[in-house]
Image (cartoon, rainbow over all chains, first blue to last red; front, side, top):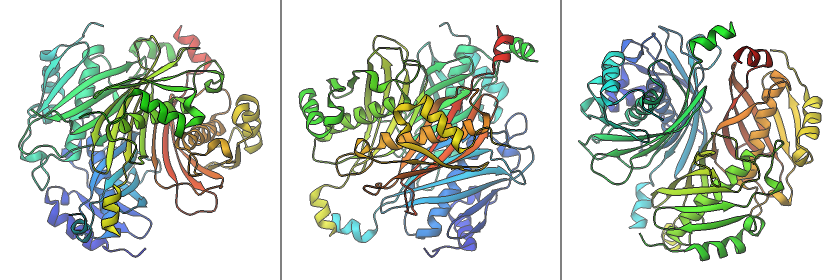
Length: 147
Length: 147
Length: 147
Length: 147
């Protein structure tokens, strides 16, 4: 399946629609199979002890999988997260960016399922595993038919 | 089971250990069965459209269930979230605080399981449902025995 | 919301559509808020050690929440499980029926979310906690509009 | 990490400890990174419509990830499933075996996390995605120290 949005378009989308996270989160690469997003870790993300907090890892996974869906279907649809399951497996390395490697497993008419592994940059073992489901609203033409 | 920490001790714990969220998040009530925490929603939590973001709801659930565990076992243990599952069911009402109602379902020697429902204050239908597992480290005495 | 199917209609539905489980699983009670289903535990459900297996508990939760949805929307729709999250918290008591207490948290146009706690009959602490999402296909009239 | 149990030892373990599923479930291959298990689908697994039921897919994932853990740590430990999250993404193909491809993401002292994708044999798109956590009991020596 051809990509509807490449790396630079996805990053421009972040700048425009999510200005509050755009300075911390960047798409590193995207192709038909894999999107990699980087969280530029700074003090805002840290818990006592110097590691990145669970909610920050959740937020990274949420945005990254969302971008991987948009890469496939374009900006037209407004996908909403309906379910997430996350396993926190290891403490992130201190002072280290996080990388989220995302795959889309299903891209249906109304539901999309994606998963990602989150790594401390340069480490081999994943910090967290996350799977998420997004509800994709019907396209305008279909909406009209339903009215 | 008697509570180890009441509402004022839990709020003092938040002030001391989580100063970055303590001005937004308060324990409203706690007893043997139920802890209710309130998120004082402000602009930091909002997504385009005026609703509270998914990661903010996740963060509320995570802290609230964590506090419900501490209420039972006291500050001695440093519990770590190992798994979370969350269903986002409805859009939070705009400009409205969120309330998390938490129950502890299991409090084992090494694992605790809690769940919560999140509501927009004053509404009857839950915005989100969340269940989380925490790993509870062995107590110092046991650590010593293991060495 | 009025019930579309009461206990005897739900049990008749089980007999007709799920004959392979109908002799083991019965709806005990159902009202607007709660459905309770009973698994009549026998040798088929047991693991070495005499406890009910995880997949059997999963199957009980899946059917029970499904029935709780049908109680609300009637037999017209063919709901399909899309996501499940389950925490196995305690070993079921040996030689003891299981009771699943189910609540529907959301009943949308296309997605329903339910949860249940599973108990060994007569025990106070839950054996397992489960939440599930079901996809509800559009009604015939809508299907026609989409063609 | 070297494997403690290869394919033939894992299948012999199934024959001995899970006789009730051993005739339906076989380990196809196992190495340090991936275990593939096959469910020999027959009438017992089918739902109305000819597809494999959700609980059967859950049972396959549960046993397969469990075997992938045993391949690494050997038979010594008695791991117990504590959490599972599963996404049912597509209808399994009728009359087709299922293959579960399992990876272990974390193998800690007390918790192991694994995931698997389930496919209808010969198809490219996954039927289901599943992640599970297992609690690994302390080794006998540690038990003794704790007494």
